Image (cartoon, rainbow, N blue to C red; front, side, top):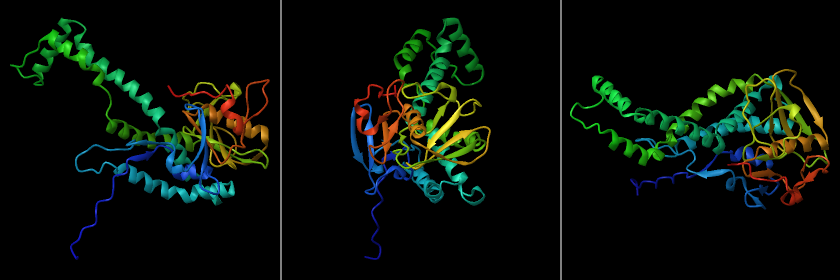
Length: 328
């Protein structure tokens, strides 16, 4: 039939906060990742499509805008930087004249800004601010009456509308838990932060680390961009902390089992071959920042444990008492 219309494409509801494009770099020949979940104390094999995702994480609620519009735009953006990411994984360099460097920095920025942990932190912050702002006029009846008087003078409170102090205070107390940022608010903030945070990563000098044979390779997690102070030593099990702009903090980021990056504010951008203990130490910090899940190409990776314990291995990680859930 000439006028037959195609059915509308289904709305994407499963949204990845860690892109499948990135996770695919830690998949085996069967395109599967080895996953350790600290919250369930289980390990399993899964495709990148089935991990590091939340329902409607990128959903937009606005008239005239498809709910999955942002999800699709992010997919396009990831498609643009994916070839450069793959070249760095393969060559362990940023390419001629650093041609692929910006793609890596864009990926790091995206992962640092947009994730459930950061969103939860912002939700707590702004919920407290919203509640404090609305609660302030109810501090005393006199303050309430003064606030109403100011709003009436400014034409923001109808002259004949009631202004019962006790009634409005009771209504606020019963409904204050509903005062929290909307999903759209978070999405707008995150998109704005992408442009604000990019320079903090771009200004750093990125050393590329190449894992040697027999090291088991680098791992990643559901919170892949890690901030670490070198003087703190082993970070496995410690609390995560901010500090992308602090000069005494390094940024650690795994790009694949064979390639990882270490960002300093000073020094040269070079390439260094690293052995078993360096890879294990790097992995311990990466794992220490996980919300719940650790991803690797297989269970043969190593990680450093607190002295005098020997190196740990992925195949026995679930039996390690150091493994714990870091998401609150």
